Image (tube, rainbow, N blue to C red; front, side, top):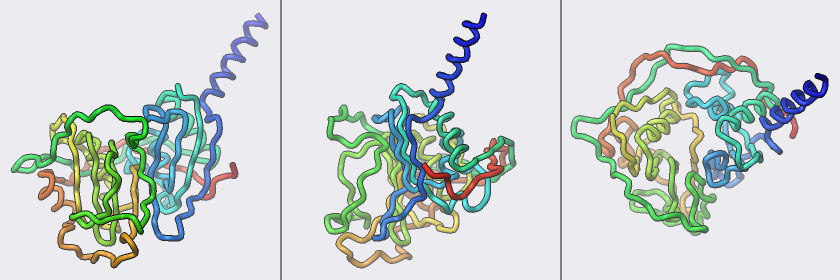
Length: 303
């Protein structure tokens, strides 16, 4: 009987170790001195690099949303969970499942930020995305050839641009290297932003909009295909709090003059959605499951 007890304890101990990252680093984010910055992440289960994650400039709201598998607008807590940002790198077994990864990240946040949360249902304002009267204007994705070894991987943020080598496209935004797949990707210029993505569902696109509206966005378009999106608009910076998708703030190529903040080609988001994509948003109150942060320390413990 004693041997059996020891065996059970040993198995439980191994299982607990399997719920932790092999190595992890959590540090406050330090923006580059040249004004460029990127917010986003890569790697983890289901990605081309399943044994490693690398998050840059992520807020605690973003990290909790990933760990608890909810949208960032379903996370509530003190104001600083948006303003304070962090870099995280961690390694794990390449066979780690998404469920195991979520538990690992929850445990890491609890250890480094002393995070305590609970779940509750809360009535919140939300936006419902539907198709406009004239129908959708998005372009359906076409099958892409298999990735080559040196091709950019899906959801991999591009490297920070070199202002001296960038060229401007006809839309007034820096042209990124060709071949990037997956998304979404956002480029911000003074007074305007471009949100784009390839081979995305409308549900994925709707999820990417909540960062600009600071409210949940629910897809009720009924569209089931995959599309290539490109949306140019003037973001409301009072609402926009960043997001977990890659975001690049690009300086003018070659140090040239900055675009005007009141660019006539960048309408408000609601107008841009209807004019460019044939979609519309309507606001309504709806019960939403949220993860409420009860306690968290602003400075993570040392690695």
